[in-house]
Amino acid sequence: MATHRTKMLIIGSGPAGYSAAIYGARAMLEPIMVQGLQPGGQLTITTDVENYPGFADVIQGPWLMEQMRAQAEHVGTQMIWDTIVEIDLKSGPPFRAKGDSGDEYIASTVVIATGASAKWLGVPGEQELGGKGVSACATCDGFFYRGKKVAVIGGGNTAVEEALYLTNHSDDVTLIHRRDELRAEKILQERLFASDKITPLWNKAVERFVPGENGALDHLVLKDTQTGEESTLEVDGAFVAIGHAPATELFQGQLPLEDGGYLKVEPGTPKTEIPGVFACGDVMDHTYRQAVTAAGTGCMAALDAERFLSGIEIDLHGHVEEAEAAE
Ligand code: NDP
Image 1: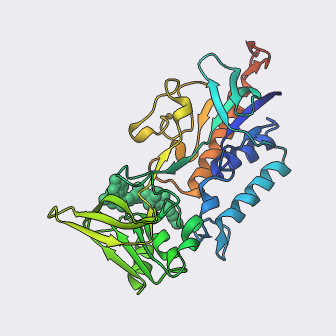
Image 2: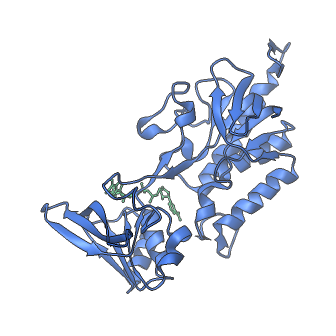
């Protein structure tokens, strides 16, 4: 078990964390990035990325994350494969955290870039049939349903992208949405409606996921959100794509949360209410939630961390002293 000391501890490794790392390293803050359970974050479970500026041709999400990781490392970020399980933000700086590995982290500033993870419907059968027909990631599991009947639940960008992706594997994709209008961007809607492999099913909510005799998903029980009428839909695979929840569990009771569980920051900045603690990316952004906006707020977090440190000396063995005439 080791003790790591740094001017900047970055928790989480998506576009926000990597951008904070690139800027932090170039500001000589010698950042340490604790990568978490899913290094690279949500983009590692997507395929085509067409909207990250700078790439005229379609790129792959995992490739983009690999490039960001390599760039962060090249400029001097130390990557650690660990997951922060405990953190004390209230008595810092310096801030102290513990990893799942047993390692301890002592940091002058903390950049929270823990992102968000898929939401579930919370209806009967959903968790029990996880990995047996029910999934929240078509790009991870779609391959298993080659030539089979599948459904996607949701009406946002994720749901439409997942439905389009599944047409690579299946000719029979149903998109189940609780309203009769999609929230997804128009360009994605156009692609969806142009596909003869996708059938939208409007005004339907999934009541439960029902297994067959073999223990795998057999059918869905649906309820019409207008009439209340029940119906069933036989499918081999169902993909829940109803949005994401921010990963803020670690900070509950230490930092204020907004509706939906997002970390609260000073408007227009990545500053939390604790000086020296910054939040960036999907963990604090309930409005835009794009890779490019996450990267932007990661950059802002690093710049603000640098400014914060320019006014004070923090002894990573425990003491804070105001620097003299820090203008
Ligand atoms: P969204 O929050 O945009 O959409 C969630 C969808 O799920 C909505 O249609 C919503 O219905 C539906 N839904 C939510 N809860 C339930 C429920 N309990 N039962 C049934 N349906 C439910 O989430 P996304 O993950 O689609 O997108 C998140 C963000 O990421 C967005 O900003 C999006 O633009 C972005 N994104 C961008 C991509 C890109 O640019 N390529 C790709 C993927 C995501 P309702 O509409 O009725 O509220």
